[in-house]
Length: 525
Image (cartoon, rainbow, N blue to C red; front, top):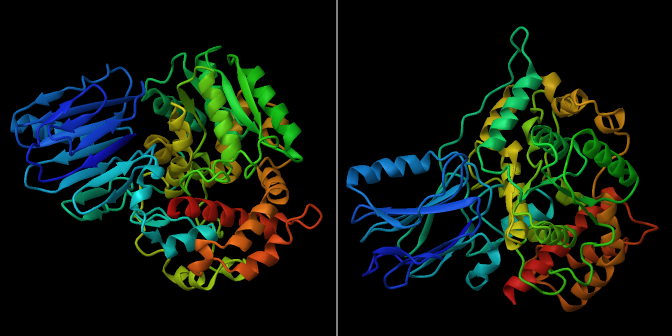
């Protein structure tokens, strides 16, 4: 939600607002907010200390005056306390002569903030590509995590020299960068329901509160309606409250679930009143890794952005062209009703043992996986997998002038989900029963076919990936040089990428190798 350049110990520390960014008189420090109606910014000083805030707006409040306000020291302390208690996404910058600068992220993250530094200046951006010049190499531990699909929410990124500011963390910079994590967030446990408790009413009320925190209900809001339980629950509730107001968009999958997805979306749109247009991008016609893919064309793209890049970029382009400015999604719904390990023991994403069955994982990657949980952020109020998903989604939307809203990632929704009994979380019973209460058919409530991007990935890997792997194997890769990917194992696996021999279970994860190779090559060369 911002770009920044901060040089502490400035001789001219007085800040002013230019109409586009905040800067000191010597222009050595700047803070550039993302320009969007859902984002506001403010600044205040007591004559010595200065705070600058870029934050997601809340409803029923006019946007802040961006000018730098003069406060007394007591008023400044009060303002600082109000900032840190803000209920939506925010980033706080604090500056004081003779002291390191501080950058703090809020707990309800919607967009990422990546940081880098040199001897004098801290640089930050929501777009990792802006920090390319500060990359000094590959972080092998993070590369290993990504190669076996074992993502971890931490200050580390794939690149040495580039850091992530995690939720509630504070970055200190006075010539070197130091990031401190917060205390672990406290969480609830499932409870028994009170007599006559109405779970669906509580769910609807909590969902309404989550959406109503922000000034989203206007003519430039669009809902990402996939036809699944999570986006379907959020979008149909909004359309129920505001009939005929909101258009929709989605990516159309392939395979057996394709026709079912079309039917389910059509039923949702007919059961409650949505607006036109309904934008549908056929992901099978905009395959990842195709010749028009930004990664394939050598553009500098963060490795954390959506790996199905081409269809998501096309959808964002169409949404922006339609006049929308805000996109509401169902991200976070899986985690809101997830079962605990005590309720149903299950493997997490990317077990370390997966390195033994993925033949392309190199010796150095295998060696560092023992330490893959070292240095991760403490438990957050919002599930760390949700936070990583939001970070994956945001940059593509922001580049197209779109602001994301994720009601399931609202702290109130998280708290409700944690306390629900097992029977309401198992197999997403909460969302299923809500859709059933709207009169949806069995096709919507209990779909038979799996709906996923598995067929899109398969088509990409069997159509476009073989040539890319052949080029990678012929020309080399930093991943080979660092011992992170084994070229012999990769060659054997790439040979299987044929429609006749392709196996989703064995072959789908190889997509990450290309994603990392193309990103690393663009960042380092």
